[in-house]
Length: 269
Image 1: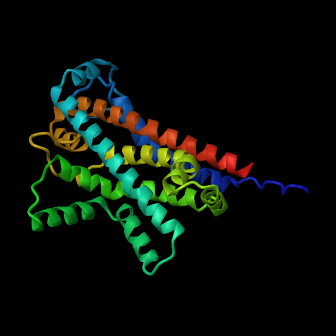
Image 2 (image 1 turned 120 degrees about the horizontal axis):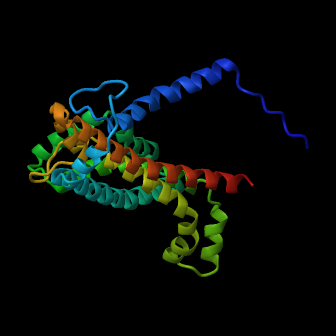
Image 3 (image 1 turned 135 degrees about the vertical axis):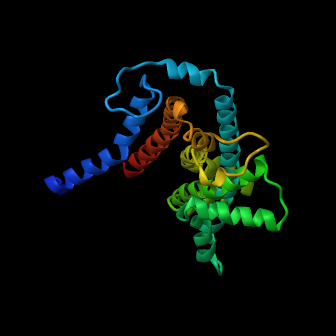
């Protein structure tokens, strides 16, 4: 069989693609540049001089470390909750037909489509109605609402590619439901769940709107940055912290992309 020749993209499409890339990434490049700027009051382009002193200043700020620590804890626990709930929901909806199945699926993915401010307001109203005080755990619940969506989508996509005959063969050979899940289904889901967990962690770590609930006197890293932006002399430190967020979120996103591409390549062979 002869493969169809690939049709190259036109100049207009290429130009539009590069314009979109520049629109998305030039602001990030400027943030990184200003993190090294010697000017401490305003943004001047190009910077009059470059320095690494602001990295040392940020390193010695305890409030920065407190915000980073809280964000990492929230992101980690939110991801764990999302892994459990998202996997269970995917298993129930991908393999079973019942009344209201599509409605439940829509409700599960709705939080990722809604603006974060809507989710934050809804959660705040629910906490007030139920008389639940704002705390560390209310932040975790808020983040888990959209982290579940990422894990659920990855797990559902993978479950639909798993042949039912594998599970039937396992049961016919005497394996119980748990053994079938552990030795047959879980290895098939492993990379998809890992990719979903990495994306969920990245989304939770830099989420702003749903982190408006403080845990004691601590705030998460995005809220700390918003508070520091009103202080002109702290802008270089804020830029340094922004660079840290960019790096810390870029790594799991890149790993998730690599895992997804590797799975697609192996599936297409």
